[in-house]
Length: 275
Image 1 (cartoon, rainbow, N blue to C red):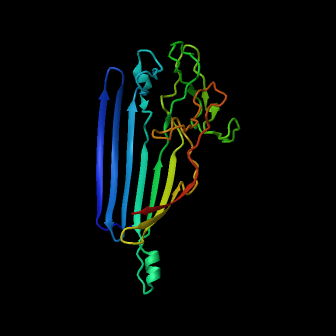
Image 2: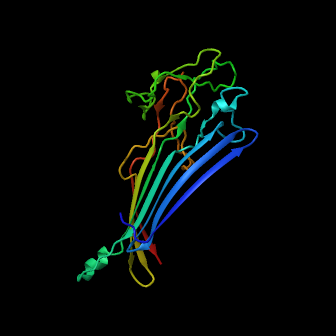
């Protein structure tokens, strides 16, 4: 797409944080391009390439420790729990224009507003644990040894719940031996990515000087793409919403299984009277 009068912005940031409990480092590159409203459309797209590293996962003031070794925080140096390496967003708002000798068609087909929204991001980090205190540290965060380079499941079929996909291959890991620490890093495994495509269409009809009618249709996840839940569900979900997360304890019978997915395709239609 050729953009007339585009505005392109590039940002780079690097942040180091340190306190009495943890160390974190973030670096990110943000590319943004936009076309302000002219020629009946406006366009905005941005891409973020970033990484966040830390030696601790913050989980609120009363959360338990996520470290795996006593007096050795650096052993847990790895991706932050919120780290998403690549994020892409794009939105478009376009207004239809129809000029012909037929006044009825011109009035009917003009001024419709189409607004697609596209989102894509890489998966959330997952920390795999042995599920038992083989290191005898009483921390409960032992990690297993990785014995296969590819940890993806060879067969995604499972049947322990209504939504069930075998995402991680249990054979790729073994428990850390008694009195030792596992060699798998903290947050070393990536969960499933996210792909979203929403679309809305609306039009305002002028009835009188005082009254106007808006008709609109919205489609969420219009491609009905299945987005599985990774290590945690994002904030801002409706009250009562629950999402099964990936089972990450090696000693669990459901280890490596995905048991939750976000909403399927949803259509919504509405009419509003303005006066």
